[in-house]
Image (cartoon, rainbow, N blue to C red; front, side, top):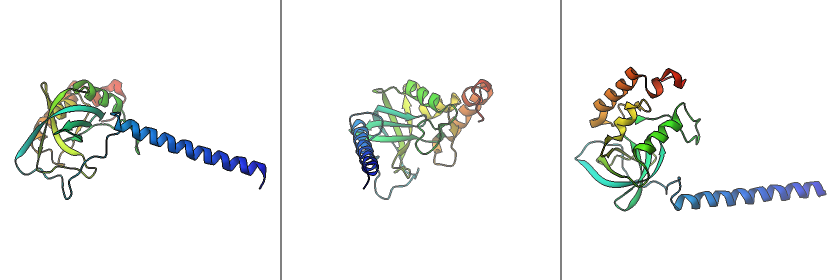
Length: 193
């Protein structure tokens, strides 16, 4: 085997080792409270059912993922929560491009629910989505985050996906954003809602 081939193989091996170390460091960072959460918990056989008595739980915000998803500590466990009834522009870019105003939507949700803040999570039945996220309403003392994101024009209504009790409030908030030219409706944003 030629010297050039041996060097090339060693280089490939070194790159694979480096990639493995970087992946291990990234995963360890997530366990220490950084962005990637522990794998979301999903109870076997659960669906996005919204029937049943409403349930509430006090929680503490651990991390805001993007404009419609956050991690909380609920009942002493880490839980990823997807805000019910809205769809914010993508900001993290994993498998999909970052969308117009995606980073701004994430930043706004962070300002509404900073790390460590107390929130109330509301859900019905066992509303877990296919990714294991708890699909719920999240309230602060200032109001429902789901509605507030729509009111700023930083999230669209996602009707027919089990929003149930929040449908009317989210739709009305989104219309107010539209009329006020906020967020996605601001001509200066360059976005197409």
